[in-house]
Amino acid sequence: MSWKRDRPDTPRGYHHGNLKEELVKAALGLIGEKGPNGFTFAEAARMAGVSPAAPYRHFRDRDELLADVATRGFEAFQTALSKAWDQGRPDPETAFHRLGRAYLAFAHDEPAYYSAMFEAGVPLDASPALRAAADLAFADLRQAAEALIARLPQGKRPPALMMALHIWAMSHGIAALFGRADGGRRPLPMSAAELLEAGMLIYLQGLGLDRRPPE
Amino acid sequence: MSWKRDRPDTPRGYHHGNLKEELVKAALGLIGEKGPNGFTFAEAARMAGVSPAAPYRHFRDRDELLADVATRGFEAFQTALSKAWDQGRPDPETAFHRLGRAYLAFAHDEPAYYSAMFEAGVPLDASPALRAAADLAFADLRQAAEALIARLPQGKRPPALMMALHIWAMSHGIAALFGRADGGRRPLPMSAAELLEAGMLIYLQGLGLDRRPPE
DNA sequence: CAGCTCATGTGAGGAGCGCTAACATGGCGC
DNA sequence: GCGCCATGTTAGCGCTCCTCACATGAGCTG
Image (tube, rainbow over all chains, first blue to last red; front, side):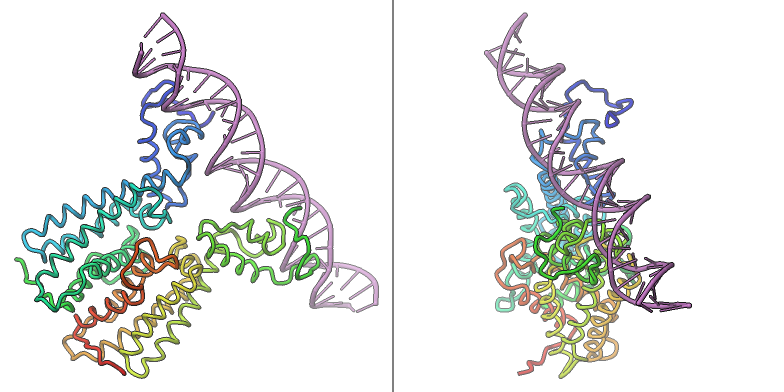
C-alpha cells in the first residue's frame, strides 16, 4: 500500500471529498515538470493520496483529464488576454502590445497549461467546453485585430480573421520555438517578448499601421 | 511467438541484416499514423518482424530512435528548403516565396518527420548530429533573410538573425496551428500556404520590401 | 577451409502503466 | 434511523520499456 500517504497532511476518511480538483492540480504539476507525456494517471492518484483506480470515478480516461486541464487552460488564457486587451484602452496600439506581452507571459508562466492546450495533442473537439473555451480566447485576438483594422482607411483593410490568424501564428510560433522557461531550443539574441514585439511592429507597419508612441 | 511474421515476405535467417533502417521506417510510419506518442518500440519491432528486445541492439532506448528520426527529418527538411531557395534565383523575392511554400509543404507532406522534429519533445542536444542538422536547416532561412535584407538601403536593415527568427516563427506557427492534413484544429477561410504567403507579404512590406511581381 | 569472435537476435522476466470488474464505505436524502 | 449510490479499494489483465543471460551465424584469421 505504498500509495497511501504515511502521514496524511490533510487527514481524510474513506472518501476524499475533493478528488477531482486535486487530480487536476496534480496533473498540472506533473505536466509542468515532465511535459504532457511524462504525466501519469497513476502518479496523479498517488499525489492525491488515493488508489490508482480512484481517478476513473472522475474521468473516463487519461485523455479526459488532459482535456479538462486544457479547457481550464484556455479559460485562464482568455481571462489573461481579455484583461490585457482591456477593450482597447487607452488606444488599440497600446492595448495590442499589452496583448502580445500577455500571450508570451502566459506561455512562459503557465507552461503546463500551454502544453496541455497546444502540445499535448488534445483534439479541440474532445469536449464542447474545450472548443468553446478555445473559441473565446481566439475571439479576443480577433477583436483586437478588428480594432486595429478600423484605424485603416476603407479599401486598405485586410480581413480581420486573417489578421487574427497571423497574430496567433506568430505568437504561437515564438512561444513554441523560443518561449520556454529554459530559453527554448535555441539561444536568442533577444527575449521572446522583444522578438514578438519587433515582429508585430513590422507586421503592423506592413499593413500601414504606424504606431504612435504612447509615452 | 505472435511477433513472428506468419509468412515472411522478405525471408531472412537469424540475423535481419538491415534492422536499423527498417526500425526507422517503421517508426516513421507509426508516428505518421498515431502521433509521436502512439509510436511504440515494441510495435516497431513487430513490424520489422523481430523480437521486442532486438531494437535495443541499435538504439539505447526509445528516445534515441526518436532523436534519430528527428535528425533525418531535419536533414530532409534542409534539403527541401535549400532546393527551394536555390541560392535566391532568379531573384530573392521569388525564391523566398518558394521557400515559404516548401516549408509548409514539408510540414504537410511529412507530418511524421515534422512531428518528430518539433512536437515530440526531443531536446535539440539529444545528439550532436541532431543539433547540427537543425542548425543547417536554420542556416538556410537565415541566408534567405540576408539576401532579402541586402535589397534594403543601408540604415534601414534589420538584423538578419531576427528576421530569420520571425520567418521561422510565423512558418512554424501556421504549420503547427493550421497546417495539419486534417485541416488543423480550426477551419480556415484559406489554405495554410496562402495564409503564410499573405503574412509574409505584409511582413516584408513592413520592412520596406515591395515584391516585384515576377510574371 | 576450420575455428573463433563478436555483432546481432532471442527468451524470460521485473517494474510500471492504463484500464476494468467486483467489492467496501459512509454521506445524504428520505 | 435507514438505505442508496457516489466514491473509494483490491485484484488483476494486457501492454510497454528495458535488462540480462543465452543463441546464432557472418566474416575474419590462420
